[in-house]
Image (cartoon, rainbow, N blue to C red; front, side, top):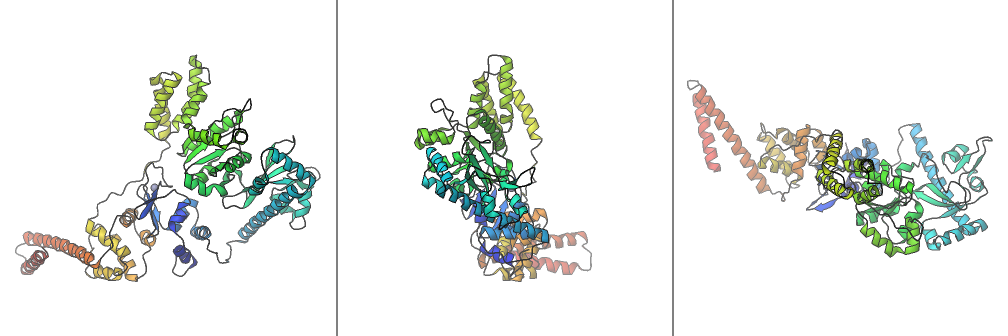
Length: 588
Ligand SMILES: [Zn+2]
């Protein structure tokens, strides 16, 4: 696929598969390789392996494997050219100007970059409004009152959208056509007159950046009592709220290092937590988490502490998000902050009133989600059978989503104890739920587990990486017909062809020539523990193959002699037998 000398080939040489895969999968170094939980199938223990030396990946569980492009194609569900682009971008390699596939595509790309540019201009405009206008001064006072000083305002790019209603419009109108102005979501159209006006008016603005740090939308909080209190950008060609997590662009490193995320509801909360020195915080910016957001988060960590508002909406959002996180196999804890005075506390208020140390302390003690749920269930009236049933109905869907059977069972016991529910009753409800769950679990692909003799495995491995003598070894194997009739014959054939070319091995391309079972076996062999290959070892492996071949031939000859002792070629057969026996004796 990546032809020699092509751009794809160049990118592949410069790209580091560990870094690229590492953006999607949490990898741990294990020996020479890296391993992690496979993103292509559900698993509890890592069988997904990446080799920095060979620049390939392989999953011993589901058998997916290949080079960096195969990985990105599978992960992003895209075609080869797109995968090359993605890898190039991730590695900061400039993509040569090329013809886009269609005029529409070119137009869309252009439109997207113009929209990003407009957002940058809007951002500059909002910041200036906050800094230098009388109206902005009032907004600054409000922010100060909320504990946001100059440093925080600058750090999070907070701005102000004035009340006039056309200030931003006047700024942008000379440069962009009306269609773009509307598509940007920064402006709205008056229903009756068709007149354009600023979408955000008399509001504090918070830039919302995508994962790579480009501003693609704004969140805006009313300064006075205007409704709604929070107003966000609408869905646009560059912004979809279910794909973006606020603060993600700045949280990435911390998420990787700390290996957990704090999930809050709004940007004010995220800002408050980040300012307390806890950078691994992201906000869903909506009432509850959406699936693409979870996938995005899952690329960095699978452990989450949910810290939503304690009001009813927040509770509902917490519970919906819990459900989804559990389904995606996240380890979830819930931080429900205690009231401050008589006020229910969101993270922002809590940190302002009680300080970051207190917040950190509670964060560390945040209970697993099941404890949170049990506590919620216990608030229900448990004195009647009906009440207990309601509590059980509330809990069951969550328990049902726990993928691990042992955990599920442990929680069942705890719930039975804490809610004083009859345990057998609870278990029968659970097993009914589990049956429903089993139906959606896909069966695991057949494991390889096929025996290939160590000598064959070793030779195949040497054909892959013996820099000094690959070509020679390939020639040797081919000339002597040494791999014919072996179970690994097809793998040998493909590797010998690749070896004879003298080019470095492209495991993926060799794999593509093979049937599924052989391809998997090849990748398994490539990931085996192995020493540096030497010519001596290669020769002794070849010798072993020769002996095996001789034994086979000897058996064949013996069978022929016994089958027809009177044949005219008996003499020839006997001579052959003698020679083979001599050879085998010499080898021993
Ligand atoms: Zn897998």
